[in-house]
Length: 424
Image 1: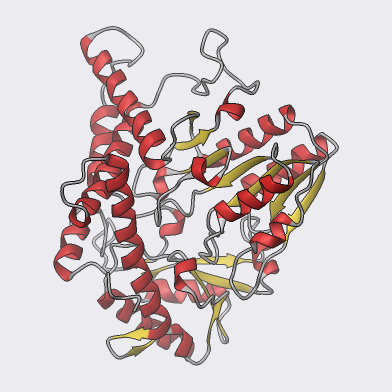
Image 2: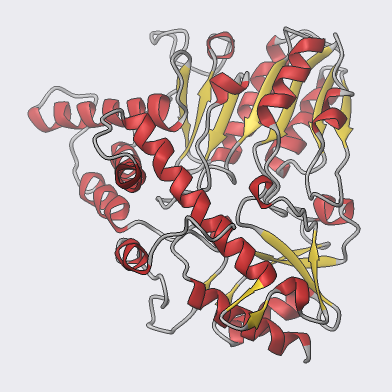
């Protein structure tokens, strides 16, 4: 049963107290926030740490006492990123303003340095990855090969990706999870199949959408680069980060020539962002400590915490689909269609795309908001959605992205609202 390992009511109460605006917006209006895929609920300690550190005028690259403390804090943040979030033993951390900037720069650098005749990508990639791959493949005379979707699962089959890889593939790009269907890619399998056909292929994994729902492990998967954005992981906007393997990190890239060959950090470090990230890791590790009492290894605690997050979210997903507290789930509400409804919930993050027979997606989103539920439309007129929506044969859908802080009672309330919308 998918609901067996969900958080208890007491645990949920404690968890919800640690986030801002869980059930009301900043104006005090009651609401359910189901748009976490666009930027998640914020962890209070992450925000507070950011503002406390960011308010300091001291420069961590200088030599006064507070500057040295800030430099040490940054090092802790980099260590948490590399060893805990990415679980990497080698390679380097690449920080930037946004994960989209990182994606475009990593694709550019790899294709300017790697040899090959083609680039393989999937139809569900974020535009920052897809467009960069298209642009630089064209610039370097490489063929762009695009793996199509599986409309039943909402993802891209590993074999469909591997079939496009050959000895001439310079770069393979695949997401860790879809930001429209929640489908979790078989990343390790894809990397293994690709490297069997071409051991020298470079592999970039966009994990921005997957990071709030599960542990990342790019080095073990066999990837060369992996990125995520803390603002979708309970943190602050204005910060993106990636792990780069040793063979990518030393490629020619923009850097001050006096720095190490594998240094990708340009300009003054954003100490407040590292402080915020440490608090996020603390929070997840704290969830894990309840499952693994006595464990001291920070990565193992982090993994345990993310397992607890995934278990609770899987239970919420099951309730949304099948029902809770006497309310029918979306699979059973006439006039509602769950798109890409893969049956194995262990292959899905807590993201759903749904359509209403009687309401276009934008109208449905507006009606949800009137009733205190915040969602988001994935429509054909959006450059961020068109390619993916068309791939699934949809005219546009409502994207629902709750978070592990949500309760069964909120799911029941959401389902009641959905029934209202279905008969408008």
